[in-house]
Image: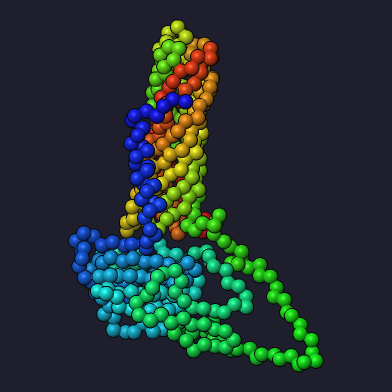
Length: 428
């Protein structure tokens, strides 16, 4: 293997900085940021509306002007916290018993110079990216938040106490009450679940006593084969996804220096890529990627083994196997399109397959070398789980070292451009 060329150092520096940011930056909530025209400007929330749709529950906040919003969903997916640090609440009607769609209760509390809303749902949800709506003929500015079903991440076990609490969303302003049911109905449960929700109105069952003469029979609880109880996070990770891509593979003209000096040109080829990754809460994603690429030799010119060639009468191809660790940063916005930048490092196998010129064999060898890539692109959200990705990546390796048909070693240069189109699917 050859040494790492000097032009390769920026790859390592950029990737090191990105990795440092990923692994030192603490997890944070998701954000909807107002434009620079409204930075630091207060807003008034005048109303909250819930809309029920077949695939989602839509929450609409009427605001006097765009304002910052952060949101976070609890681990079980049933409690959502909305923080509006620069918005004050002026809705006249109380929120007691307010419900609709999958939302069973809404609670408001005043924060320092802002407002906090706690929404509880009857099933696990995830939030699609919120967005602003500009004023129209009938309404002013609006913040739209869509809540869609999500896989249940917490298994409910039989014969356990029911606890209504805020799980994993941090301390809330004011007093947080925990409602717990043991053997009888607790009156505090009415504060967490409205009276209109008849599913929560369960009468305690009479307790059966056993006389001293009667033997005690231990009842066995049947196993629950419910799908919701069997569902777990994929590989123990949350927010995991799988990606598959196809694309155009273009190898740059390469210089080869050994028993002679010659250049090789390649026709555009193809690339296939698969990846498994996870989304972090700070807009970063990390993934492991495997791809295979191939391009056919087009022209060879120069001196090889004391023979001069300048011909397109050539045979052979160049194939690449790469195992890459990538870091991706998504730029959030108020549309379905999400631009991203990425970088990755890994190991690549470069294979020269039966190179020949004018039917004279040149080389047939391989080498494993360090590799890196940088790229950018955009993804388009089709629904709550599927995204279409279009991207570009510049791929380069350290200088590989091969041997020609006479056994003489020679060094080469490998770099190229990859254009990808694929799909990314959330696994949980």
